[in-house]
Image (cartoon, rainbow, N blue to C red; front, side, top):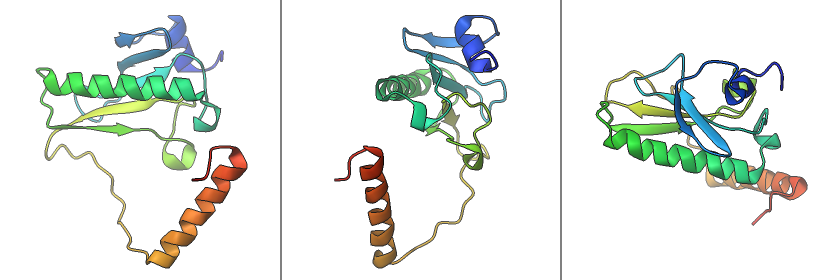
Length: 145
């Protein structure tokens, strides 16, 4: 996509601090990191969101994120843990519409984290929500086991 900054990075026409360059995925430092070492993993093929992401590209992105998280823990960076985060859609916080997995190194007290208040729905509510999702999986061809 001509107006996608991540596609421009893949094409080599936009700058990036590359961490990993493989045939189907690219990982580079986030220019607005939450913590030192925060980086992004993207599929080289453009997909604006998860609904458009080829399953094999998703698997490659997640595997690269897993390997990078392992490397971060073994690096000299101060890392006590790692979050993998993917925002799909505006309401989820997606700002660049090319699928990207955030790999965020964590330290105790670093200030990064989910701020939502967890709820405790009863089993009937949980079962009803599970049925809704199963039905949507069946409709979209995602399976419903």
